[in-house]
Image (spheres, rainbow, N blue to C red):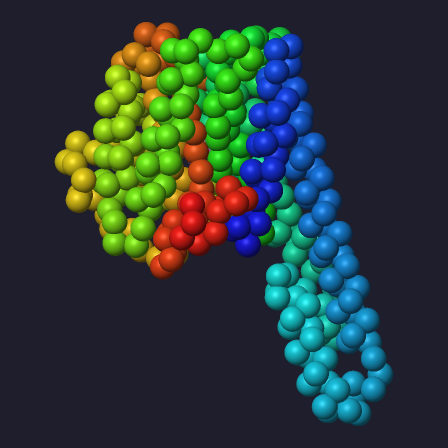
Length: 318
Ligand code: MF3
Ligand code: CO
Ligand code: CO
């Protein structure tokens, strides 16, 4: 179920990245994401309703009362049908309030924004759009138009089936300077280096060290004020996943099978220092130099890393 959340988040992020062209406003990107959420929300609602109809049809067979074998088989079939939406099994109970149960199950599984209304002051959009010197948490705005040569971080998170998927990418718009390109590629590759280390028994310090040493070896700095995080029933869960390791590799918590983390390096061209603007969200580099951000939601499995927000990934094949 977390995989499905990851695929949906990835699909909608892709759509925004494709739309990130000169002349598009960041508000347009938010609208694309909202439409994507609505589309998938509807899909889940329909799947729940359809499953409910199928269950009711099976359960309404009058022969069930007399034929014990049939009753057993039907119970198994209903279990299979509802394996995704287990709560729907309750609708076969005598006197069940079917509409309420169907509604509750749909609420629990539906796609919703992980960002809208988050924290204080409540985050006002479903996506973060962070252009150039903006590190993360840029708020989409109608009058903020993407220009040729910009680098724009697009961060998107949803809940689906009650689980969070959180993913981000920095898009190079049109003709980007070689300096900016190198920064973006470094941030991207630092995440890939980190993902390779997301294995049972490795430590979080290994992951942070991989990001930091790669970024610093190319002359950049990593942001310390924001970190990656565990994710699951909530967007931000323990453990914290720093993009640095002062104590070096071989330190920090060991990763266990089943852990899901969002790794999200923020790489700055200049110093790592952050300033948060008066909207209390937009985080910019203190020196106003460029910054790039990439993020994936990764499951630690016995086979190895599974990048839930990358469609081509399978367990052990990041
Ligand atoms: N998605 C961000 C992260 O990577 C958090 C965004 S804060 C929000 O952790 F308010 F926009 F949701
Ligand atoms: Co994110
Ligand atoms: Co995150």
